[in-house]
Amino acid sequence: MSNAQETGVRDVKSAARTVELLELLAARRNRPARLRELSEALGAPRSSVYALIRTLVERGWVRVDATGTQYSIGIRALLAGTTYLDTDPYLRIVQPLITELSAELDETIHYGRLDRADVVYLATKESSRYIRPFSRVGRRLPAYSTALGKALLAERGESALDAHLPGQLTPLTPNTLTDRAALVADLERARDRGYAVDGGENSAGITCFGVALRYTSPASDAISCSVPLPGPDETRTAEIVEALERTRLAIERMAPVDPALEPDLSAGSGG
Image 1: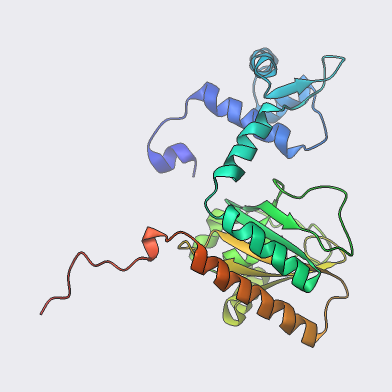
Image 2 (image 1 turned 180 degrees about the horizontal axis):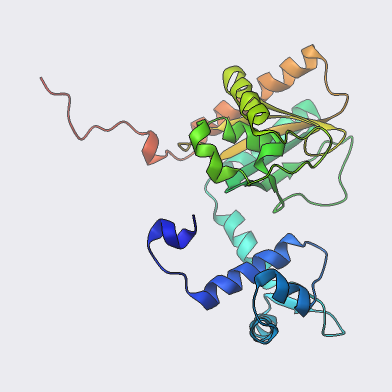
């Protein structure tokens, strides 16, 4: 169901196409696109896409290479992203606590948020033992293949999963769960034990443990701990999970209260 169908408000076509174009360029990361590619992806005439791109180039939302033929996301998009991070009421609480957790475990800790079928990474603190050459902040990955995402999907009933799963579960590694029934069973196990596990389902060679942060209802954010495969033994796993749970409780105690979680006192106690 489209957003217009859900809200009963018609999309403004030019605004919708602008957003679609920016999201398309952002999803390509470091792969610029030609006008023809963008036109085909958007299902729009080249002339109208070109006019839109020229406007966005002039405003700094899209950049063009020296040949004038290759387009990618522009620097003004960074302003929108950093403003989102700077004003987020939860990130300022989570950031120092995951920094402490990473130092305690000397493992990589992530903080992410569910956005439709993906998890968006809002903060990462790398282990001192293996540092990635790029920042994961702002990247999005399928919720069904990550411990962050599965921890959040486990908070929802099976009937609510359609809003957060693509039509087809595409494998990212040989270990990715691509059968819906197997995924649902895995989410049930995560719900029962209180944490989710990604056993090399998103990145080959990495296992990950994730817990949902229940300061909203349903939970929209989670933290996770990534460990190189073959993964930790039972003692180390218990240590990681205990540390994640302890950090989760500390974050939830400090987080702003979600009105949906407050008791309804309007009816009074009666009697």
